[in-house]
Image (cartoon, rainbow, N blue to C red):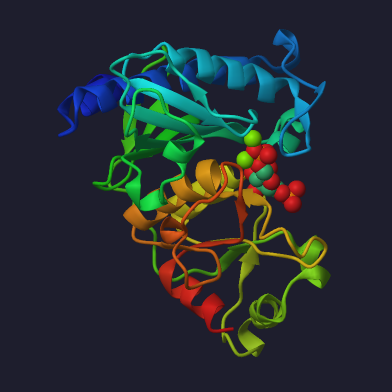
Length: 323
Ligand SMILES: O=P(O)(O)OC[C@H]1O[C@](O)(COP(=O)(O)O)[C@@H](O)[C@@H]1O
Ligand SMILES: [Mg+2]
Ligand SMILES: [Mg+2]
């Protein structure tokens, strides 16, 4: 059965894209396959538990945050087409010393860190931009998400999957037992309507009025203004919640809340918001900060800036916007 499936290597080779981008995608895929082994090894390979270090997000890093950050950084900096990298786990951008470097990779090496020690789904998220110079500084990374030339995530769940776009639709590959990425999900599209929402309801009392109204409408179900029953899901890993939406529709919401009024949201624009937004839009969904403003149009000002997120099935995001 696997023999006649398209291999990711062949898909990348056939892409109408510069050789440099193809090599960057190949390095990302190979490293995610290696990360999959480390994640699966868990305690057997010392990949569980806290590292005892605090990152730029002021969060305690898990050992796996540090391990995966090192794996991706080393692999990408060794790729001649890479000019520089940025990571959730690093304060500053890191320029590569590749004279022919022409791409920037921004990544969340391990998404869903709170799931690591409970054997729940986690992932890796990568955004790829063009670099104006082979020796980039932070300002060179601060491009809107519309400038992305590729977006990729890997989800380490019952299967390990890699989902990517280079701006021409979305494809999903599954990692085979012998370490090959094989096409299993071609031309992924998101249904415009849904009965499934994902939001961390424990934060409800802190949300702004419109978000409260939206949830009230949803929770009233068929008896309420929405006239239909909804179901809720929350994996506590954006990569897994968005993957579900790419597979069967739904909306994912992580809004602003008043506990930290100056913090626009929890999730990070450059290596969570932008790559997921490109994948969702390429699959026919909507990815916004507030139901209206496209995430991909947000002009970045800081490498680790946060945004509110409302993405998924297009008509349901419109319903969120008009709540
Ligand atoms: O703890 P909460 O509120 O459920 O937040 C979960 C969210 O935080 C995140 O884990 C943040 O990402 P990291 O794990 O990469 O820091 C998202 O993946 C997820 O959607
Ligand atoms: Mg994350
Ligand atoms: Mg992370």
